[in-house]
Amino acid sequence: MTWCFINKHHVNNPFVSAICITEKRPHLLERAVTCFQAQYYQNKELIILFLSDDIATAAYVRTIEDPSIKIMSIPAPMTLGERRNLAIRVSQGEYFCAWDDDDWYHPSRISEQMNHIQRTNLPACTLSRIILMNVVLEKAYLSFHRPWEGSLICARRTFDEGFVYGNYNRGEDSILVQALLDQSLVAIHHNPVLYIYNYHGTNISGKDHWDNNIFQHGMPLGQEARDLALSMLKNEDVINLSNQLRPFVDALIG
Image 1 (cartoon, one colour):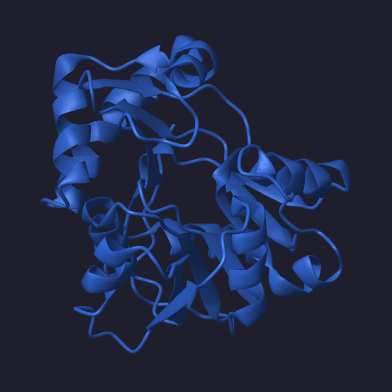
Image 2 (image 1 turned 180 degrees about the horizontal axis):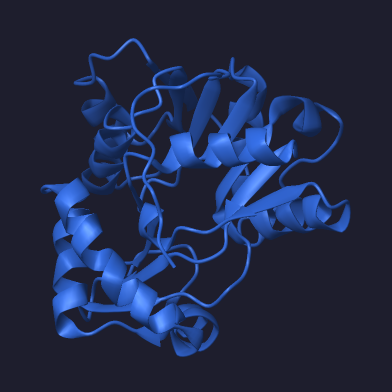
């Protein structure tokens, strides 16, 4: 299997709002912002939403000088699902895109998924496989085949029709994606190198969940492939590195 990364040119590029909910981890948020700014897809905005008492995040976002990045703080705690829904409601995009603060995104991610949405004429898209990274133990895996919720891009009109995140701190994204799947509204795109899903020890879901439900079902990547993925997390020469990683992923898929 081969994948072709999309370049910077688009025939049809609806406005996309990337939605980033963050809390007290600006060192990870900074990487997510860098990934957003590196996207080939130009017609976009990033909504960063955080709690107003989060001093560390507030200090970091004050350093951002990018008109495509919108900052929003809220005074009262809300569930993660409520925060996601709020950020979508204030966004300007025809589509919204999940953009978690602790994961890594290839520069082609939005472009490829939006092109897949337009080819299939479906309102939503997820990735079928992604790279799984245990940053704590420096182990990497190719994920099992499933619609990965964190990779969701979805039409705003579908959200307005009632397809929203659940009112929970965990599993809120599964509720939305499953509702979309039940109505056959999701296009599944195949390119695992577009997304690295990270366990770093302070995730909302704990170690047992990652070990038993995620890593246990992944296919381990060897040391060379793991080192490539770790370097990609540092946003170092990501196009070259991702092209080097692809043959290792191909070999596992068969």
